[in-house]
Amino acid sequence: HVQLVESGGGSVQAGGSLRLPCSASASGSPESHNCMAWFRQAPGNEREAVAIISRGGNTRYRPSVKGRFTISKDGAQNTLHLQMNNLKPEDTAMYYCAASGRGLESSCLASAAPEFAVWGQGTQVTVS
Image (cartoon, rainbow, N blue to C red; front, side, top):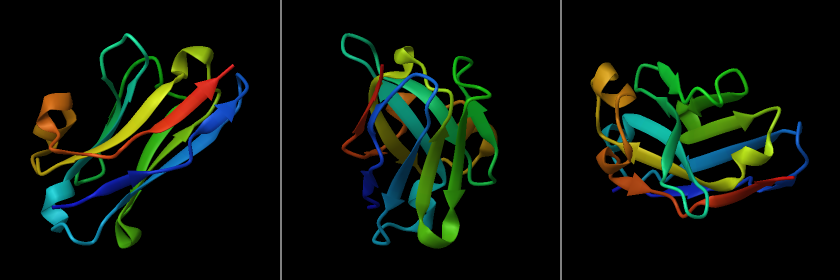
């Protein structure tokens, strides 16, 4: 099935920006990543959804990042992006890319972590 590889993490000062790419391997069928998302997990906290994008390009953001983060995908290159602007210390976490085969728009956008079958290894974002 599809494999996901994140990159682009690092350390940044509050107010700064980072862009996280997630590459999906061509070995998986396109349907295996109908629904894609970025999650994050800080030490001692549960994994939480940051942004979700459906096959049709519709998006959903957690309230704390809305207006600061943008999720997008480049179908030609099988790459998912998360543009993060005006970063805050509370954004510090390990960020994970995830994919599922959910093709129904509403079902995709309502997904939680257990509904995603494929995960990347994560990339650390630290904001000070």
